[in-house]
Image 1 (tube, helix red, strand yellow):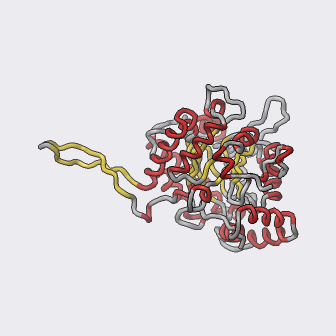
Image 2 (cartoon, helix red, strand yellow):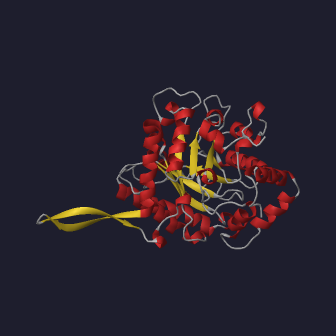
Image 3 (cartoon, one colour):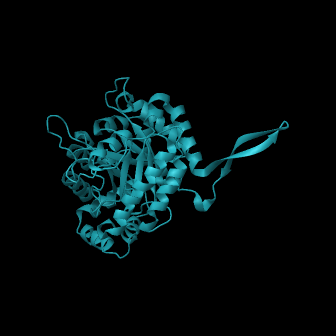
Length: 381
């Protein structure tokens, strides 16, 4: 088991494993194991990976990057370990997660193709060849068109993919309506959204559980960040839908918190993280009490029982950033590397572990030069 030693030593050892004949034997052993969850458990143990997205411990140990992949150029940047030529591979650690954005529709010139299932497979193969121990997540849309970008089940049958996470937001929901007769328009009210989330996760987890090719994978969600939504209850629902896949608390959730960083900086982002964590730990009940001779309805916060409490290490928060911020528009266009670095500090201080960086490799290169990120992910060479 590759669980001991300095992170740099471990990463070098894993890289040697990737290039050696032992890799084929490792993968054959892991994915030949019986039982729905056995391949994932064996894989995690062999590579020293946490049970959730991030391990327990102090901030530097807990910190986990989820790295967006839109194109082969992104893959090439991470496969390259030569920092002098723009390589980012030396920043990656075994616990970090690659997120293939299968919703990417390509660019106008055609030099960057849409991430159809066929293109997504090529990206996953290339990543797994270079990073045999790093997990891969498919960030899928809500479409049932299996020939286009945004297909809901993209990479469900790829042996190197850890989880399918569905992007749950108005654009994806409404774009997928053309392929889903009977699906109504987007509704932002929490009760309606929660009902739809349960139905959708039932579909994805059911597909994984019913197909041998889905063995060991998990189903997760990447929803919008809505002030009136309870993400603790959403996480509980995702856990419940994942039970058929081999465990009580396998549900993955990544909330789109990037606006809290873009608009609020370190303090605002840290505050948003704390509120999310509180939803994982507590429930709010409304109770009638008598005060000043009058009956009033008050909100009381009660700690969730351990059995019902979702795991915080299955939660990822999000930061978007640009290598050339404009100062306006969406979070991804106006957030600088310096501001993102401050938000990392704020998030870690509140207990966050996994950070999904929705950013280009050029933006990530800028981020790696910032003080906090430089200390968390120094180059291996």
